[in-house]
Amino acid sequence: MSQITKHTSETLQDEIIEWQLNAGEQQIVAKRMPGRYRRLKWFGMSVWLIYFLGPYLRWQGQQAVLLDIPNRQFHIFSMTLYPQDIWMLSLTLLFFAILLAVVSAVAGRVFCGYFCFQTVWTDIYTLIEEWLEGNTPQKQQKFRQEPFSLNKLSRRLTKHSLWMLIALLTGITFSAWFTDAYQLWRDVFALQAHIAVWIALAVFTVFTYGFAGFMREQVCFWLCPYARLQSVMYDQDTVLPAYDVERGEPRGKLQRGQLASGQGSCIDCKLCVAVCPTGIDIRKGQQEGCITCGLCIDACDSVMDKIEQPRGLIRYASHAELVDHQKPQALLLRPRVLVYCTIMLVSLVGVVYGFATLSPTAFTALPERQPLYVQLSDGSIQNRYTLKLLNKQNQPMEVQYRLEAPTGFTLHGVHESYHIEPGQMLQVMALVRREVDMDADGITPLRFVADVINDATIEIYHDSVFIGPATGN
Ligand code: SF4
Ligand code: SF4
Image (tube, rainbow, N blue to C red; front, side, top):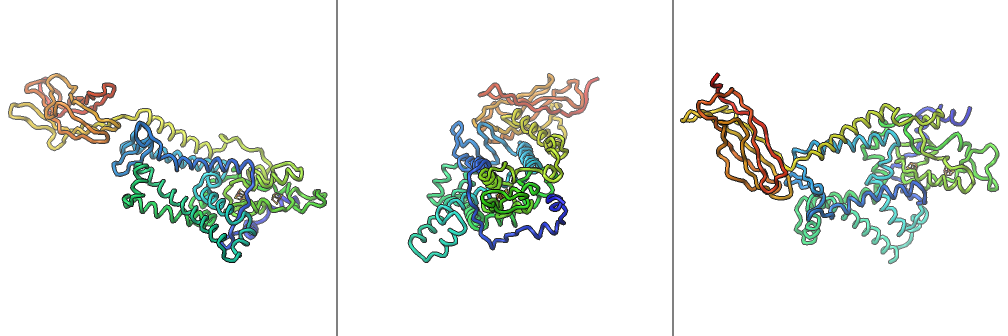
């Protein structure tokens, strides 16, 4: 029986016995090695620079992206989204949620390995620790056991100060997306920031420092809900970092610099384990702790280069490819991927449509229904309407109301013109009267128009109806 058959015939329970479960008793000090996936990880991590630098971007004299919760406005460059546009935000969130699902179905926990704040922050924190206390478990152990000295104290203090600085920056940056970023710094230094800023700062600082500095991979093991959902997103064609058992086994040390006859390609150097940030041995099969960062692939490839064996003993591969020797299935032939992509496409089209047709105003003209109409002393019929006009632009508007309706209908109760500040909602009671003795149906369509005096390119109108007794023929 081949190794692969033997391996796959093991029961799930057998596999679980093989798994390592580090419940925090073992501190992981992962070796850092250069390689393709390490570079990819740096690239993925660099995306977080947007989080730190984004709030300081200015656009037309204002913060380019500002989530102004108190005023219920989201400013994105020259666009402002109001609660009326929240459906676009919902579609955007749906798009990213499904993107996460499709990426997981295709290539596993790519998000965890390359982008997740927990793994990214942990990587930076451990990098600082390695610089100051040693880059192997042995060196760090030796450092810990050293007697107290000024050198040890200064290294410890520097490490924790840098960790705290990153945690504080993380906390302040979070608030900077919700208020003017430059003013925020002034308020923080003057100890005059809003209570919500201090709460956010405290929460983010404590959790960043605790999670990235101390709990590290344990957060992924025990606290992360996304890690728990993985199994329902994977299938036989999901590509994951996997050890090619058939090629690697039986493993054994090199003898006189050579692989012994009948020996597999794995020389049991354990470099793949040494580089793993969650401390697992991928040769024991896929495990809950694997964040699919691919760093074990870089490590094993470097070993294969040295012993002049082809790369890819550990590689991104699917179960179908490794175990069933099938060719990778075309992405769009996989029903799960197809369904996810369709949902993403629909939500993307919705968001693009929303932005393309985003109106600089929101206008409604709602007729009063109690009573439907009144008859005035001169015999004319009157309807009452509530006109609501929201200025969604970043500059003030001057507007004049008028009515488009059949002859005999007139608009009353409104001023000559109105001034509306950015973000302000103007509410006006308007009256429409129908002349005495004119022939009319019970329901007459009409249109309220708001002419923008200072910007003729903006068209604002709302169609409504006039209700009164039918007269004439
Ligand atoms: S790095 Fe490669 S050769 Fe070394 S133990 Fe891991 S799988 Fe085997
Ligand atoms: S087993 Fe490999 S891919 Fe998985 S977490 Fe460890 S290093 Fe990353």
